[in-house]
Image (cartoon, rainbow, N blue to C red; front, side, top):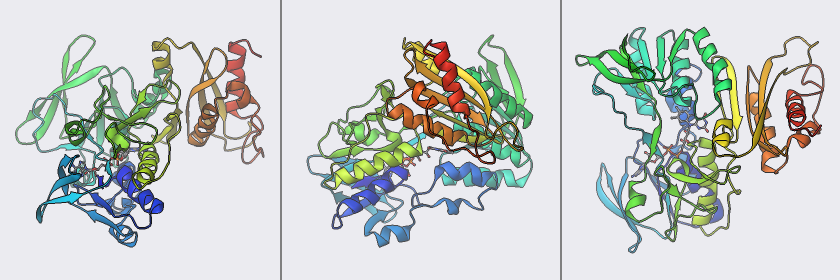
Amino acid sequence: MIIGGGAAGSTAAQFARKQDRDAEITVLERGEYPEYSRCGMPNVLAGDIPKFEDLVEFSTDWFERNRIRLKLSTETTSVDLSAKKVEFRSPEGNGVERFDSLVFATGASPAPLNIEGLAKEGVFQFRGINDSKALQNWCAKKKRNVLIVGAGLVGLEVADALSKMRHRVTVVEYLDQVLPAMIDPDIAEPVAAMAKKASISIITSSFVRSLAGGSAVEAAEIVSRADSSPSKLKCDTVVLAAGQRPSTDLGVKIGCSMGAKGHIRVNSRCETNQPGVFAVGDCAEYLDFVTGEPLAAGLGTLAVKMGEVAGRNSAGGTATLPKGFINSRVTRLFGMEIAAAGPLYSSLAGKGIACVQSRMKGSTLPPYFPGGKDLTVKLVCTDQGQLLACQIIGEKEAAMRVDIVSAIISAGQGAKELTQLDNAYAPSVAPCVDVLAAAAQGILIKIGRK
Ligand SMILES: Cc1cc2nc3c(=O)[nH]c(=O)nc-3n(C[C@H](O)[C@H](O)[C@H](O)COP(=O)(O)OP(=O)(O)OC[C@H]3O[C@@H](n4cnc5c(N)ncnc54)[C@H](O)[C@@H]3O)c2cc1C
């Protein structure tokens, strides 16, 4: 029995079926859509993908073909562990389903915000297809003055998309930089500069205190954290993108062990502390590969990886996760790829882990070959040269380089191995000495090993 049919839950169903051809598999999903890519929603908004329905990855036909019962518009309302049954509410009425094993894949919902006057026309979330469609329809009516609350991945992807559609966009961020959970301040600076170039105003170190207007939003009061001074911004559209909160009420009620930020804790088999109960995706937390501390990154990639493990194990398998997640992540904003792996340098330094960082500029092609694109690479190592993290920004090929570093980190190797990487080279494809190797050389010099 799987509660939640998003990326994590549907993947769990897929792998439960691979594990056991005869298992009875049921997915209860509160929403009206079968699994779709939330990650692609900003691309629909920007007009890169024709319509939101194109984002469906596991169709209802797929569920039927795989003999998995998918019950849409069906909200699980309670779990009885001793009787091994769940109760649900659906348009056809209330019902009960029995289970042998249970997977929580209930995801997350937007974090509640303490902003006065939120209940107005023109205020949107951006978590699911329905929110996103409502925003798209609203913005199709005329050019809008948009205020986005939060400069994280979702906030900036929506900002980029709406600015491409020629709306006027302002982003307000509470912390002192954009993408605060994804990159360090020095890498965030050029991202903010590119946003400005794309005519997006970014206001950091500030928060939105209230929204003004009648039934529809007309303005926002923005307060600077530095001196508490308020200012007024005219806007007719507000998008709330200031983080998410895991949906774990059912898990809490049956006594699942919870992490400090309210996620369900799991082990490497994606098991909770309750026998026969698994948790996956945005509602769960596992471990950070580098620090060994709890990690709930809220990424589709991790949801899918956990879904595979829990799906197999819930049907009798013996799958395990790696010892932790490297948390590789990427986005494309303002024409640039911004990619990272491992913890932020600022967070490692804050934990007292002795580490060294090095930044290097390079190109995707040798200097003499026309068309190369600039790349900025930042590597973080221990003072012994073991790689811990990496952040790269450039017009293209940032993510694939981050993936190389991610492989080296997970092999427990370091800057030395990166300099020795046996990379492919041809002038029209890739440079002989890659910027990754150059950055690794830089770090070895810094720590006195070269
Ligand atoms: C705009 C946007 C862009 C993103 N871009 C990226 C990206 O580029 N790369 C990346 O790796 N990640 C990205 N993410 C994150 C990624 O989408 C999530 O990590 C992923 O969707 C998590 O999957 P999940 O199945 O855990 O949760 P969800 O997708 O939230 O699915 C959980 C499901 O559970 C259902 N549910 C909850 N409670 C109940 C209940 N009681 N009964 C029945 N059903 C219930 C919900 O309706 C929901 O459908 C993005 C997210 C957003 C919003």
